[in-house]
Amino acid sequence: MIILAFLSPVWLLAQEVPKLQPPTSPAASIMGLQPSVILAPKSYKALEASLFSSFMNNEGGFMVPNNFALEFTPYWTKDHGLTLADYLFPKGVDDQLIRSSSFSLASTSNFLLGDSSTSNALAVGYRTTLFVSNGADKRRLQSLEGHSKALQAITVKIIAAMEEQVNVRNVTDKNLLCQLIQPVAEEAVKESKLFSKADQQILVKEIILETKKIDLNPANTDSFLDSFNALVDEKLEGESAFNDYKRYIRERFGFSVDLAYAGLLSFPTNDFEYSFLTRQSIWVTPAYRFADKLSVFKVMGVFRHTWYNLDYYAQYFPLVKVYDKNFDYGLAINAGFDKFSMTFELAGRHSNSLVSAGLDSEGNQLYRKEKDKDIQYAGTFSYRLTDQIVLSYTLGSSFDPILNPESTLISLLAINLGFGSPPNPSIKP
Image (cartoon, rainbow, N blue to C red; front, side, top):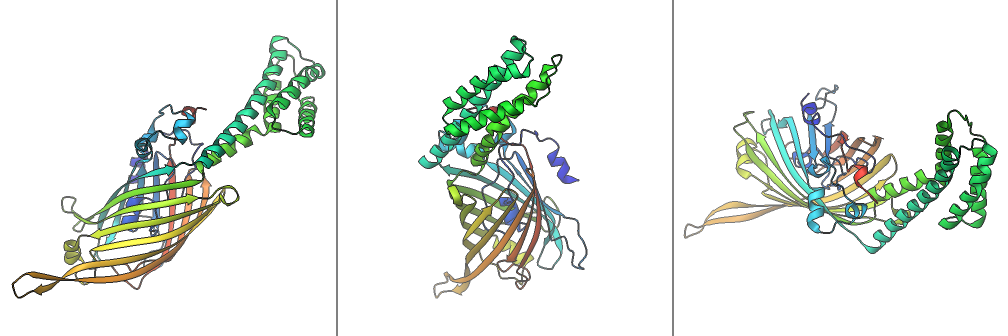
C-alpha cells in the first residue's frame, strides 16, 4: 500500500488538544478530488491523509478508492517547548506563518484526458493560516484558564492534606480522616470564590460522605488515596473545566485568514519524465467563528484565482473549451457539534480568455476576450468516528467540468486520518 509507506515514519505525538477536521487539502482541491472551493483552516496535525472515492464504478459496482491526499505540517513533528501564551498568542506574524505552514500532496491514477483515456496526475500544495486575535478572545481564554487553575488549586490542597494525614501521620481511621480533612476542604473551597455559600456547604458535605464509603486497608493505602483523588476531582468537575478550556483553544472565536497555493502535474503518457504543469491556483480564505451561544457557527469566504496551461489543453483536450483564467468567489457556513458537522457552500465563477482574432492592416496580432459565468453549490456532512478519523459526504452541483459539462452532480465520500499534533506537555501554563 503506497499510503502506508508515507505514514510509517511519522512521529505519533500526543493527540489531545486539536481534533481532526474534514479534509480540505489545496492539492486535493486543484486535482478535483475535493469539490469544495473553500479551504477550511486545517487542524493542527503533523500529518493528515485522505481517501476519496465515489465508491461506484461505471457499471454501478463497488470500487476501491484509488485517489488519496496527504497534508504535512513540519512544525508539529516535535516538541518546541511552547508556553501557553506563546501557543495562543504568537509574538509575530512570522511565528504564525511557520507554525501553520503545511505542504500537501494528492495523487490519482485515474486522471481523464480528452479522449477518455486515463493517466497519472500529481498535485502539490502549500498553505498557512493567520489568526487575528482580539481583546474578547484573550479575556475569554484568561477567564477559562483562571477557572481551571482555581479548581486545580482546590483539588491539590485537599488531596495534599489527605496524603499528609495518611502517609506522614499514619492516620487510617476514616472517621478521623474526615474530621481532619473537612475544615481544610471548607477553607480551600471558600478561598477560591468559585461557589456560593450554599454550594460550598453542599460540595464539602458530598466529598465527606463519599469519602466514608471508600474502602481503606491500612496495609495498602494507595488504593484509598487514588479513589479519594478521583472523588475530589469529580466533585469539583476539574476534568470538565479543563476539557472546556481545551475545547475553546480548538474552537476559539475570532477572525482568521487562510492563504494557499497548489499546482497540478499531468503525466499524459504515464511517463514520469514527460509532464505538464496544467493549472495552478491561489486561495485567500477569510473565516470568522462566532462567540458564546453562536459558537457552533463559522462563516467562511473564498477568493480563488486559477490559471490554465492552454497549450496542454489544446493538445490533450482539443474539443473542449478551456478558459485561461478563472476567478472564484463564494461563501460558506459551518455548524460544528461534538461529533457531527455540516457545511453549506455557494460559489460563483468568472472565466475569461484572450483569443486570437487575426491580424490588423499592419500585421499586428489582434485578440478578443471571451467570458463565461458559472455557479456551484454543495453541502458537506461529516461525522467524527474518533478524534483522528472523520468520515465526510458531499452532495451538490459543481461548476461545469472540462469533460462532460452536463455531469455536474457532486457525490463524494471521503475519509480523513490524522496523525500527530502539538504535544500537550509543551503547552505549559
